[in-house]
Image (cartoon, rainbow, N blue to C red; front, top):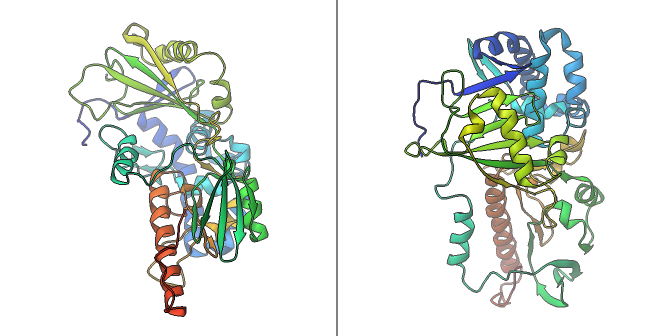
Length: 395
């Protein structure tokens, strides 16, 4: 779906009680953006040498180190906003390596706060259509309500125990459960020590969205925005969730929070929090309160027992310490990296090197995990051609 073109700013920046022009942000972000770009170039030159250094340094320490390149405090707040939204953690807990991946960029008077983030496509009708379509294409193969409690080695295969004493024996298992939930599963498999640590230490982000309905998209104005606004308020970012639906007059604004903000937004009801955010938004866009229709929805990923968080989020040192447990897709066998222990294969955006934090990572690693199963079956057929594999099971 194409974005409609409007004679208004694409983004807005609201800090210290006023709208900051893109030209001002570009001018005052330029020096820091150049430093971040230079450090990102070091990763391209010698990743193994420089990545651990930035991985062990917090974003807070990095910004402290380069305070001379931050002419006004609001620039620092803007960068901290990107860490909260993209990784759902506070800057003091996030590795500076993540900031180099985000790569805020300035080109003349133009700013790309997240130049390293390429959210090009959306699904018309919502991302849930993908899951619904898969379910329709696989009738009888999906069993809902199966909560895994134990994985136990049985020769080269496994015995899976589910809540309610349901047992499944499988020769190959693909585990796509977030580590925040998988660590509650009893894994009686000889896993590498570092992989077991990764499972028990890696968390998902603290991110939440609060959706607010509006009868009119009042933010589309000369001193407003078409897509998004960054702020120093109680929400780091807000965007027009209906920006690709050019024909409609009404709209939905997504208030996006991360880190400590996500914890705070869980208090009270969606209605009370939504009204609070709309009141704050009135400071940015006068007239917003009058256009709001009082309808609100709030996500609760951090409270969901089957996720316990939002997207992948890594602590200091984890990206390089656990680098062996991320899929790397490459035609070069020397560069390619799969994530499996024998016939136990892992999948999910949390083990994707290229698309960490995005649904692309889930799709990519699912495909690579399936390819790993196929390769192992084919290898076994070559070793034991006399044995039929038609009854082999995969969970």
